Image 1: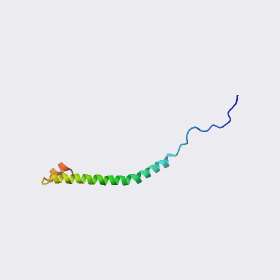
Image 2: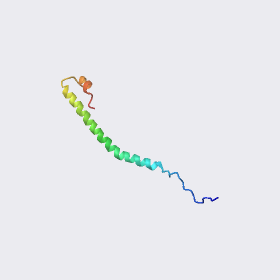
Image 3: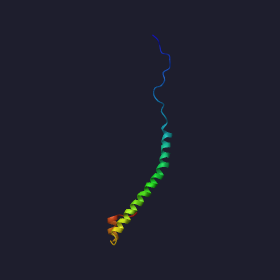
Image 4: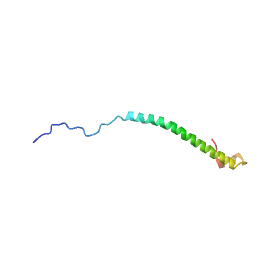
Length: 75
């Protein structure tokens, strides 16, 4: 009987340390996410302001309480 004397390589892949990957993901998320969030907030705020002002213009002459109920608040 012949014995195999060659060393067997480890079949399982090497595991990486997850901490640097997590830190890198967080930094990329902050760098990309903050300006994207600010930009989308500005777009939404302008869109909502335009909606409220248009509604107030369409219901011109009504009391403020009625305008608040119909159109909502600008802020």
